[in-house]
Image (cartoon, rainbow, N blue to C red; front, top):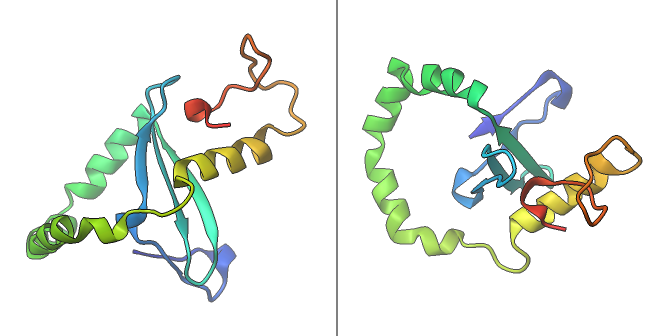
Length: 128
């Protein structure tokens, strides 16, 4: 997938969903998509999917252009299944790295963050 926004200027970011993880947030039941973009920038990211997003995703995926793309390229999914081990991560799990960075940046200096009994900020998957 190629991602562009006005804030990126002439830069187009490549996203490869084969490397990303999908995990459930035990506190909210929402779904977190975590991963890292490597070309041409080195960004880790977290996308939190909430129930309100289901309608928008259904609209996007049940569009004729999207359905045709999936049907015309279904064989690529089979190829991915046979080669999925090459997309396995090495080293620290990406979800731990992303959630730790998110909690450091978003919770730092924010006394209004929810507290647990141990005094730590609540966070998606309690990864820190």
